[in-house]
Length: 273
Image 1 (cartoon, one colour):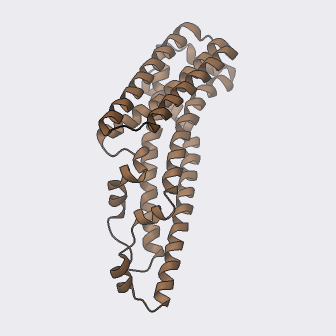
Image 2 (spheres, helix red, strand yellow):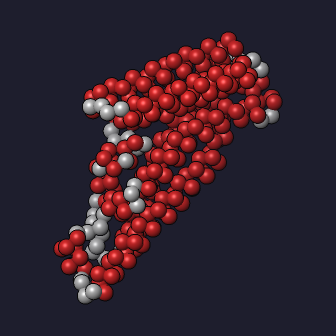
Image 3 (cartoon, helix red, strand yellow):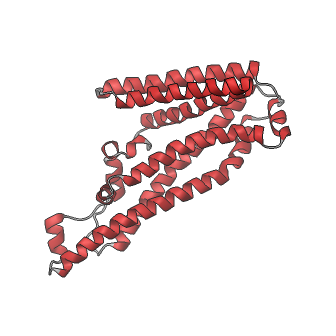
């Protein structure tokens, strides 16, 4: 069976999950931004009621931007995006594996008896996850566009600045969006490798569970906790930019390499139908 045929099969399985996740993300984004815009609009109305004009407001406070609206809610929008980014990685990683085992019993039999290297099964499922992450980036951009349209529609004419999305992206590293949204090609590669860490660690956990049952489940859980603890520890460390860059890349490369090596061994030597 061709590699992209395997990818297509798994991609069709996760499309409903992606649809629900992205619908929830959009709903949370609209709800959060609308609340901030309504608050800003009330303030503008109070100023207009006090005999101020649009020109007076612009001269004293400037025009409103999407970045300001996001900041009014203390970056809550970024929190939703980041939470769903991590949740998507974790949920899809479990789902695309356990659907095989917990579905019809012949599914895993057919999967593991295909005339393809078993490691290719891991790579095909990883590809599905990476496609989902790239789509996630597109949905984030769509939500920024929706937020900008809401800002223009709900605020009085002339009070909204232009170039709002560009400003949000330009300030992403400082505002919080950069945590889960790539700002350059190198940043994109790092983000995809970071998403791969989630998948490979969970894959190792799943394959340990399917190899050694309860003991494997416990061992996989410990492995996942250790990997998460190391990542959190790196986040909390006070580091210079180049030091953080080195540690971040070392983490994703080492954990991915180790997890893929363990997974290759387990799926070829230990996992049975």
